Length: 321
Image (cartoon, rainbow, N blue to C red; front, side, top):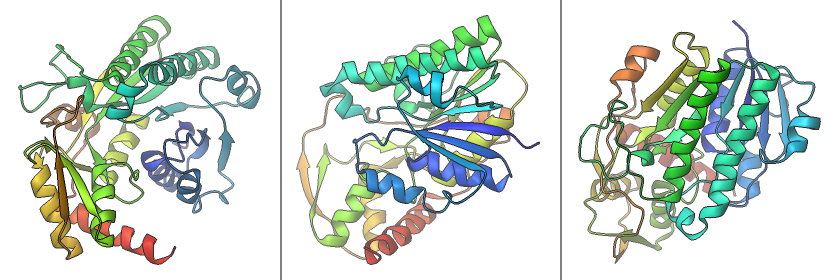
């Protein structure tokens, strides 16, 4: 069934890839993005180049905290689904500026949920994060583990968003699906994230900064697998509230990630080592059994294949500059 979908943060890495996917399903999409200066506006505008001429796409430059967005720019709109990906991102920056993260990620989500309530939009998909688990030794991490111990302001705001969703599901019948993303990578990845930052430095012969001894591990998940999970959540119509991991169930060490980049790029990395940073968890690993059961989710891209696709995209980007 064709749907009208509001995607916040639709000019970003995950959002722009998602929009292309749901346009392929013949849905109409309204994108809201404020081009936050966390990274360059030009990068986000480039993310949208392939879709902005599509008559099914409406773009609104706006801030999810701004009442005028809802009262004026979206006042006449009708949507079947909201996919809420807009957020202040990053664990380490949230430690330096926690109040802004609270304002954007919690207040912004609350205002969007209020908009959904008033407009009677009954499907709300929320981009959460694996960081909510904090330091948790019960691997793989399961949604059934309710003892969450976040160690960054960013992570705490994502838990707050999940709980706000529970309130609105309970009181107002809005189906709320919180998707905990596990270290997403692939074409268009944010330039501040490790794979993108390291690959760019290796290509130019600049040193990379590695915090710790390289033994930290991440459950890297390729963008196409994440987008497939979000798309399944858009069409999910069973239970009223769910928290669902979207990961790959494979732990890749930081050292192995760098080694894979070196192999794919055919260049050695110059490594500058520094102590571990506050807010970083040592290991992440998702159980995806619930996602498989509810959404038919099945991650298909191996880490090496995903890195190869990312490297090919990055090289093409640098050649076209």
